[in-house]
Image 1: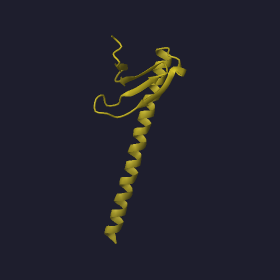
Image 2: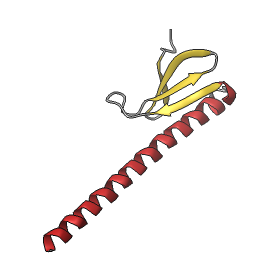
Image 3: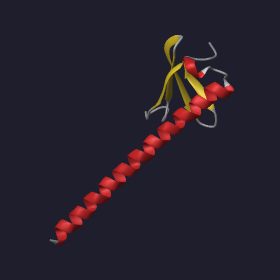
Image 4: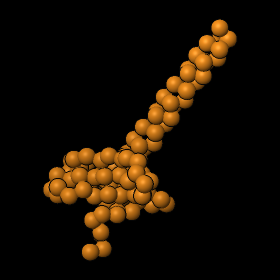
Length: 94
């Protein structure tokens, strides 16, 4: 009976920890998306209506890229934030 209670407690802790981690992850992705939207509309002067979608994800490199799609251009623009927002693709210097 004691083993059953211990197993149940461990399972509950693992489930709670998993939901906490997932909630934190989703919150971080939403924060990145909102900050990039603000950067593009306020600092770059891009009209918010021209942005189709902004989505953050986890990857190997960079760790948290944020992908933006615009109405007038089907190409994906990938941004990364370290100390400032940097456009990775397409290369803005070309």
